[in-house]
Image 1: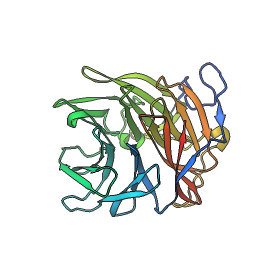
Image 2: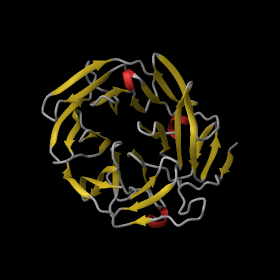
Image 3: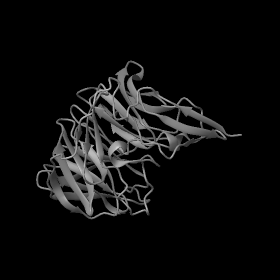
Image 4: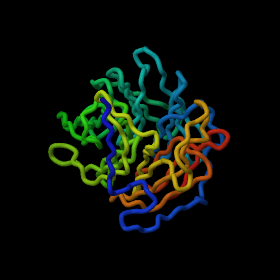
Length: 334
């Protein structure tokens, strides 16, 4: 017997008005600068920025899967990382930034982690290989100081597993408090950490949800959350979300802002299924800008779809891979 449920959350996080019924500022002529005119990739994956370098993952490549780009010149500095079953190859690469500089690739299927460091933006690439035991089902990794790590497991009741000072902490509250068998699919999301604010941020990809956590003695404690309208049904202990759900495809953190890439239905209309796997026209083209108190400050309605975003935590610069005939990399000041 199928049980149909509809939960309505009052906060209306992704609606066109906030709780005070104030009009949201929409900007449709945002100034941006092109970093790279054309990116040759069937599909750009994860994108991260640190110390003047943007790293982006070429999902369907098997060799040189990571591209390191000088954001001032647009010059590609280096490609590295291979997919495969070899001793230094990845079967499920997960990208994160080291606090001390450099890009870390962790394998979600085995205990392989490699830190890649470019010296002074030259061709000199250093590799530090290590191993870290992980359970299957990990989808995101954050690097902390002194070897600390935070792992995201969307299929577990406690989504965050943090290794800190030699101890494990299991925290993180599932956005929906239903015991379901398909949590791995339903609770997919993005995580980021702002070191200046000392806040961990989680955004759901399949429905409107945004949460901020702070570190306390026994782990991450929920500080603030925003929930949008949620519609789903339960059948055989599995959750089926409505096809109209509009979560955040991507999340980026900057010095002062949380940026979500998602569809602005007031401007873009309801989600439409793409005509094929290569149809990028239906991707969202709006950027929702929040502060760390989860107040929506403005919405940027770009004139083209966007597939990836990343931010610089030391300033309020946002980088994006746009779909404008070809893929291109752009940057803008928020």
